[in-house]
Length: 376
Image (cartoon, rainbow, N blue to C red; front, side, top):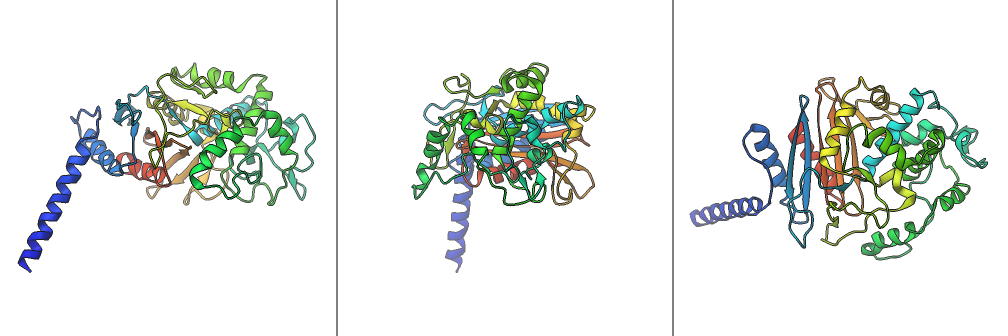
């Protein structure tokens, strides 16, 4: 029995040391001078205990002060520590830009949240209603439109090997145009009443972008620059376009370490194809934290569900915490990138995490990581 205890103690000590050796090998720029530095380091190194992780950039606002941390590498083949200017796909956090733009259009009195979306479509779409209830602009941003998550709304995978799915998606969407989107929109058959059920929807976010282009008579690329990139001085933020990837963009990987296709698809730009850095997202988060900005304040108003459980605002999830204060958040996951942003307007604090790896658990681990580091 004594020998068994000694053996278990030795194995435990060996495992602990191995874990310490493993985590200390993660390159980083953390100066380890403050309590926050230590908290970030302890939390992030635990995140890297999963060997599939590649790199992560973190931006934190604490009581109005910004902090940045970077760990890991921008690519597996050529290790290079990311910086605050390293660019990642934002994936679905992209949707919050379109929703904030819609809030601006409402405040500019160009649209009303309860407008039937067909008011802004050039062709007739009698199919875009359910038993007389139409899809509204609000439904597009609170996930209750009833539209399919993807266009085209058909099985494109068949019995394909799961490992090939990212490449099938890429091959289909690189040739799927705006004309294809509007053509297939005629074939959509709503199964539920708009406003009744919330579910993730790329098609709704993309359609909102097209509508905003018409409302403001400008391209979405220019709208992004005019209302976000230029005034907030977000020098690393842009729509991803085929053949024009940012020079300082990290490579994205799946959980098996394979380089994944970048979502540079025209039909998903407004839903998932903004690329940005932690430095820029700190500026965007500061904008959202300041609810004296009327667009930010409106976009945070709950519109579906209960805030105790996590209500949906304009593409933001708003939750009332146990202390009665609010958290506002959004996740993002693409083929090779994962992201998460959560902020607390009542504390002028928040965190954004950008990672160049995506598997089934990465987003949840980013949420848990944010909880450890930033929850007041």
